[in-house]
Structure formats: C-alpha cells, structure tokens
Amino acid sequence: MAKVSASATKQVAAPPERVLDFLRDYRNSHQRILTDNYTAYRVEQGGGGEGTVIGYHFAAGGRERDYRLRVEESDGALIERDELSSFVSKWTVAPDGSGSAVTIEGSWDGAGGIAGIFEGFFAPLGLRRIYAQVLEKLAAAVPA
Image (cartoon, rainbow, N blue to C red):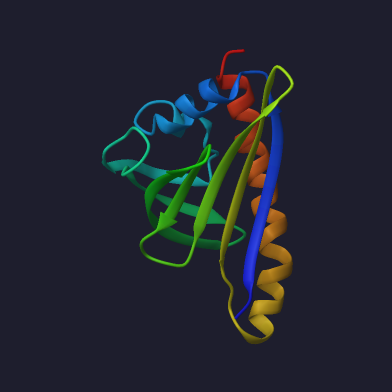
C-alpha cells in the first residue's frame, strides 16, 4: 500500500495571518471556498481552528465518501485528519512578498495491487484540479 498525495499552490494577495484567520473560520468562511465536490458540509465541534471537527461528503472521479476531520494547528499550517480513514489534508500559508503562498495537500494510504496503481496515477490528477479551484476561490474571497 503506497502513500498517495496531491497538492496545489497559489499566491494570495493577503498577508499570511489574514489568510489563516479566514481558513480557521470553519463555521462561516471556510465552506465558501469549497467546490461542488464537497456537499453536506457541517461543523460538528468548535469552529475556529485547533480542535474543530468538520464533516462533509466528497465526490470526484466516480468515487464518493464521507469524511469527519479533526483540525490541528502547527507552524502556520492547518492539518485536517480524517477520523474515518488515513486521509490527511494540510493547508500551509507562508509569506510571499506582500502576500502569501498557500498550499493545500491531501494524502492517504492507497489501495494495493493493480487498483493501487490506477489510484496512484489518476486520483492525484483530479484532486490537484479540485484543489486549484479551491485556491482560486480562496484568493478571490480573502481581501488584500
């Protein structure tokens, strides 16, 4: 079973702390940047960063599943760990000129065998495209 991962990075005109504040607001702001791949979004606990628990249904590439993620914070990053699988997403926000470089990365333990080979090739392509769309929405939503 190999680790599968996908990531995307975008420059955002806002300073890192403003971007992180936006991303930490799971109750109001965070869900506004999600694509149509994410449905049934809910905040189950907290809503403001560390300790928050969110859930959603995710569909892409003919696959669907439910997620329940617990949020951690570490060194300018928000880490969302799924309690139902090995999936982890990580939002990293770093200074970049007068703005920020924002990266979102998702990773999980892939399937074994032939299915794992296909998953390892195709899943990152689709997820990278979705992450790029999420980051576009983030760049438009956070004021400089």
